[in-house]
Image (cartoon, rainbow, N blue to C red; front, side, top):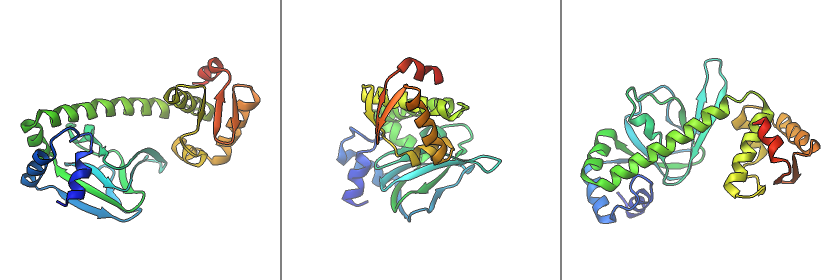
Amino acid sequence: MEQRELLAIAESPIFKGVDINVLNKMLVSHQPSIKHFNKSEIVWSQDSILDRLIIVIDGKLKAQMTSEDGKIINMEEFGKYQPVAIPVLFSMKQILPVSLFALEDTEVFFLPKDMLLKCCMSNQKILENTLLVMSTKFEFLSNKIKFLQLNTIKQKIANTLIRMSKMANSKTFKLSQTKETMSKEMGVTRPSLSREFANLVQEGIISQDKDIITILDPGKLRDYK
């Protein structure tokens, strides 16, 4: 493993805080693999068994779910140093419910599950990190499921704006996503999304100046949520 790759792995939440020399010896003995994927290339297919730890070294991955009726749902993106699908890796069936593909040219680190377990058993910090990543991911998935259960576009917009407001700790904030990205994640068209934003402005619930949003009536916005 190259020094650049080792330093990237050391930045992952799974191995964060582990002495770099200890980590190097550990990984060398456990024989991980590193693979390059071109943009749009499939990294792992939906409904296949996930039997190894996946960490993005460089680039970006995207998780998409395809429903039985062919509808595509964008679930999550994974940037540098992020581990992928840890709860699935430690589930009983280990079946990945999404497809992973490269959003751009991407370098990925793979470590077999049994090797990760050995790392956890030999190093308490890695065990603690892994458990923390799993608990955080369960919370994310729970919120994602709740979001997908929302029926109307306005409900989804309200949920998104309230979340962004909390993250910014302010009623005025910059949209962290383009409306094009938001529409894809919500499974709606860009014009439909813009129309509902305009309705919220007309109702006096929010104001909008390009990508700057101000929540004027938090109570009404929460009613939509």
